[in-house]
Picture 1 (spheres, rainbow, N blue to C red):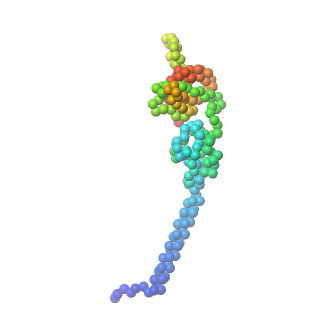
Picture 2: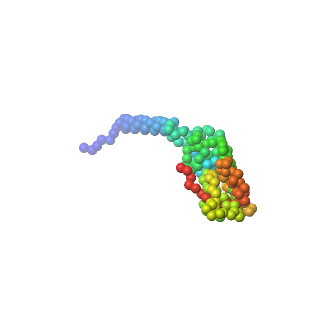
Length: 205
């Protein structure tokens, strides 16, 4: 016996059921989307690498929507204007979510530090260059110094790079370093004349 086609009333009923399911599915999807959006918030994220002590600018920090996380404290996106001009309290990589402890308004030098500009020939710098936050051993080598047997031929002072610039008209690079204030008077006279060498130390974890 040939199969009978659905009657018009049956077709209308099937269409009504299908339409109801589509509407219900759309409503469920919309509700899921809204719930998902309500679980996200605007925070600040690094768009470029920023080294310790360097300022935040419109070019290296921006807002992003991320899922809420009650464990990690973040800086709100609405605080962007307040953060611009402040400084990084640690080395920050691109993509890092900014946290309050990573932001400081303190300008170097701080506490018992002194900032000393060191003029050196490019040949006395690491080939990869120096970045703010790099830890150095500044080796003092006064020109014409006479060293007796058993006496150390060089004296090293621990320092941290704050800023670099150059080369200048004399072909020298200027490296601003932060040292303990007790070492400043020893370093300053020789640093201005380029009578030092810079040894790069590992960064502290």
